[in-house]
Image (cartoon, rainbow, N blue to C red):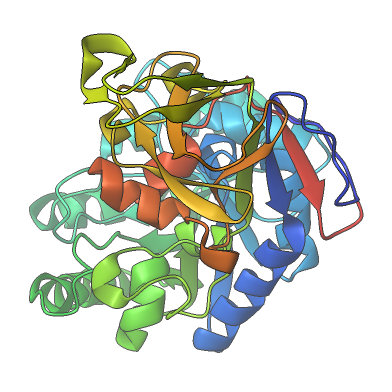
Amino acid sequence: MSASQVSTGHNVSVSRATAEIDLGAIAANIEHLRAVAPDSLLQAVVKADAYGHGTVPVARAARSAGADYLGVAFPSEAVALRGAGDTGPLMCWLYSPDENLASCAAADVEISVSSVSMLDQVTAAAQQADSRVGVHLKLDSGLGRNGSTPKEWEVLVREAKRRQDEGRIEVIGVWSHLACADDPESPATQQQIRVFSQGLAVAADMGVQPRLRHLAATAGTLAFPESHFDMVRCGIGIYGLSPGMGLGSAADLGLRPAMTVRARVAMAKVVEAGHGVSYGHTYRTSADTRLALVPVGYGDGIPRAGSGSLPVHIRGKRYIVAGTIAMDQFVIDVGDNSVEAGDMVELFGTGAAGAATADEWAGDSGTIGYEIVTRLGARIPRHYVGVEQ
């Protein structure tokens, strides 16, 4: 269960810090996204420890909420899910040329293929495991990362068809990934849909007609219905964050943030005006004031780039981080308000009662909400509420 601890109630003790994961919110987000794309299957993407939320609890909640597929980046993530008892459709898409994929083949994990050399690798794994491997052929429709170029596509499809006819693989899917779906004004998405559709036509002409054609991630699912095809792959949306503020906030999109991070004040003290705070004295007190020390820092995944700008919530009031965020701690200037050691600090969460969200933290530290939740370290235990485990 990764670095996670499970709780099924809301009264979790926070000794230093905790991340509460609301599995009910994840289930609600999946149901909402399924309703947005009602004619498509839904793949819940649980790579990178489920974007920092905890792979196994999230995977179980996603399956219970009706996710048809799970998706991960690496073979090791897929095998770990199988080891935890998952038996449903599961795909992975990123591996090195010398990686042995036999464990995936033996565990009925479907594998993405972007080149003939990768097809060779998967075929070798199928032979080693004495099994037929399901593959998803990936076309680079314009993102410029993984995937076959349109120029090389015919060669890949022809070779995949030959090996399918020989019984070594089964082409289950053809897929690609959108680059700019978070920008509804960008012409790139429509161009990619055209390239993808052309690639599907080429495959069909060569006798490859997979049952799953998939292109859209969360942004495409929400903003471009024409990109839905047979399956949508939703990552950030199932965790209740916006895929891009150009599409609106999570609340605008009908999504509920699943992660709330809290810590306890470790120390509070009164200092005089002009007192420097943290490394570099980038902040000095303007009057006699109370400082509250929060015992989390960039060693826990708190973005140092948010020094002097990140909001937190204590006793119903919003404060801004004072000075530089250190490895294990940061400081809040609470003025003459009553804050004591042991008080609860909400770093980010649902945004209720004026508290911050991960998306707001992202904007204040020059990054994206994906990074805020995914980078949260193992020193902050995860506790689960909302759905019995």
